[in-house]
Length: 107
Image (cartoon, rainbow, N blue to C red; front, side, top):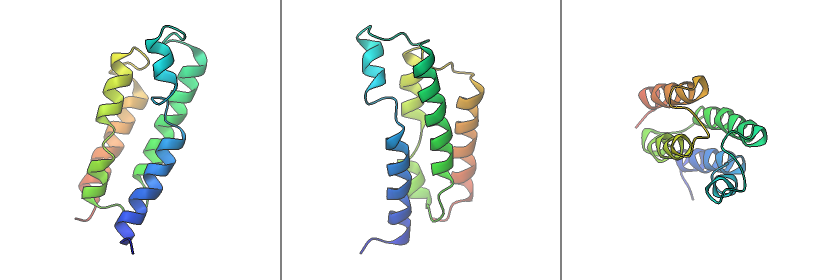
């Protein structure tokens, strides 16, 4: 049986994946079928950032679970592709939420 921490991690991952723009939309940007500044892409990405931040607040997440949820690699891809700006308020908010969750999570 999964531990409560593992169950919390799976709930958080599931929430994040449902709104993840990287799987389908970022490929469209790379292929030139969609521009990084497309309003629809921005809306999906904004929603995903909010969902990610909420997922980081999932009750029962441990530090090791949170490390697996580190948003930095995904943010880097979105910034590199031009979909997000490095200094975007929502990007900074997600980074801050991750740091706070990690600092306050149990081992």
